[in-house]
Length: 447
Image (cartoon, rainbow, N blue to C red; front, side, top):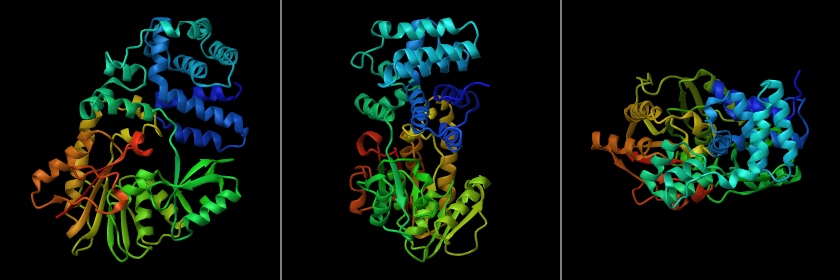
């Protein structure tokens, strides 16, 4: 049986991400939740290697292609990931000696790919000396190729960013996407205050601070162990949620006693927050097509002491059999999207998503928004949000809806809370490089 060390496990996880389409966070959570892998340094190294390789895969593949004169796609995924993990240690970590990174990669290649260990040894040992000779394009001469190769993003996505926002914004966005994101949590205002949670975290030797914009958020700066293992989390005093996601939910502006619909609720993070903002007084109908997510949502709502959330399974693009009445006071359409605003957090999306996938997403997004409008009462609030930075999933969907429905208009919030995030167009938008949050888009519509 192969030794379960961080480098070996990193290759195993990366293989599963690439070959089976699994998500790194889920695989890491499963690996780190056991009792066989408890050394804090090893746990940290495993996480760094997996996310580091996923963030910088394009750049690492450029090195491989330049040194072994073949496209990494022509190599077996397992062999390519052995090389990527080795190269990442050489160029992106400071405390790991070069010989340790090289020797471990060669050892693993010898076990997994007998006869190819020579290739691994040659590429890794030559990388330090030859890196300066590799022909990486400059930003000034060829922004598209530079961002693709040096900042590790797929070419089609870089092209779309440049086309929509210009080269400088695309550069800032790509740089930010390769950074480690902050860990934000949302305090459950029904069970605790931010001050109380801050004090309890400090007593457990966590370092945290109030988020800069989200009024119920905290940023966890350092932690002695996973925050999900604290009694604070287990008792429902907070929920892990990026600051931009918290703000997106607040666009609905729910009031106690209202009826709210969350049309694509997922695991229920925003639906539960809506109920908290309503002091658990009213009804939040939380719909999702995935019964597993609806079940998880109910468990989380129970843990957090929320009774207003009604989780149901259904397809938001189809007719919904709600009781007769004037309709909902507010509807949130948190539409399934490319997730391109969350690449810091989910870097594997860069390599999994294809340009052709956007058409199907756009069609579903448009259907969801049009269907939601039918269930809103007059003067109610219809909020469309995504965690995408691509115009075709955001303003183009909203503008298409408004052009077909002349009685509707954009109604941006006037609350000072959103001042930095509301553009002249009236749309809500956050960016990793500007706000240090996930990239979110939002539009508030009224009839």
